[in-house]
Image 1 (cartoon, rainbow over the protein chains, first blue to last red):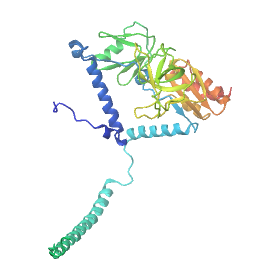
Image 2 (tube, rainbow over the protein chains, first blue to last red):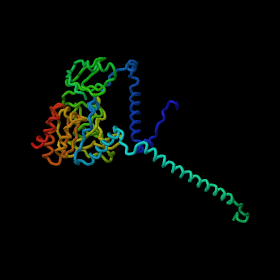
Image 3 (spheres, one colour):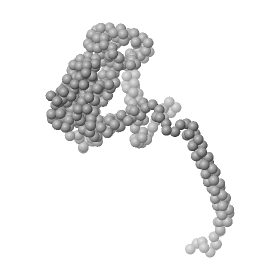
Image 4 (cartoon, helix red, strand yellow):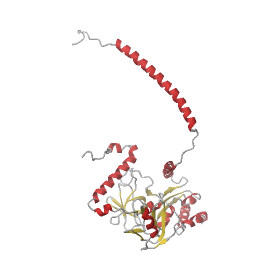
Length: 156
Length: 232
């Protein structure tokens, strides 16, 4: 049933460095599916249909949103502090509000179009020259034609 | 976290949680159990609530109950074939595979000896099987996990560990102003600290232990006074 199969990323692609997040996601999905398959015959209809409003979470760390307990301050463990710094930067990056802009939108639009105008004129020029080149080449090509070898040249 | 300070006892019905559960899905943390449509407390302590929908009981205890994903400090007890036995303060000792370390292979085993301290993550926690630990993240890097060298190690209540790890806890930041240090707090009630000198390290440990019985509100007050504890 090829139509039912979900498209999957190959292992080679997932092992690439930039795919690490996707890799983690795919692995989690696989795990979930496996555990579902494992318990599928244990589940009865009542268990499947009853919708409980309660989710049980046995970990204090997740409930209370505790942070990781490995910390270093004032250069005691530089390697660890770099890690913490990276983590903090990532956290802030996610929750950061809009950064104040040095250039307002109007100015941006003006300069953008001004640049674009010159850019367009440049590209047109380029195209024109390119076309001329092609034309020239075409005219050259007409001159250069395959010449039939003389009979004496062939053979040993 | 709201300042909800109602105390619940084991066996008590927690109607305040039930009321919320009528409207939306809620998360029941440790200390709360669902019996059909009732919510019953199974531990004694203040009922805590975190927005939007999480409830749990912050009971005082020293016995760690492993939960998946927790970051804990364990003591290596013995080597058993491919595994190391690690004491994490729970009813059963945990196990960690020698392959659960960064860059470890069959040939290149981590150098662990009985008595070593590990900062590790609980990978598997189930009442019926022994907990399993790892010292690498999903990308195979050690990150913050691994063996803790030197320093000073002490046990405390689980509450103290959790208290230090709250987002808004001022204690660690207050100590930072006094001296440079490194710390590992396990949610299994074990803390490892390291400072430049023995004197500083012991002072640091004492400072943290003074918070043992403090409530959230008292900590601010104590933190202002930490400097004097460290001098002692």
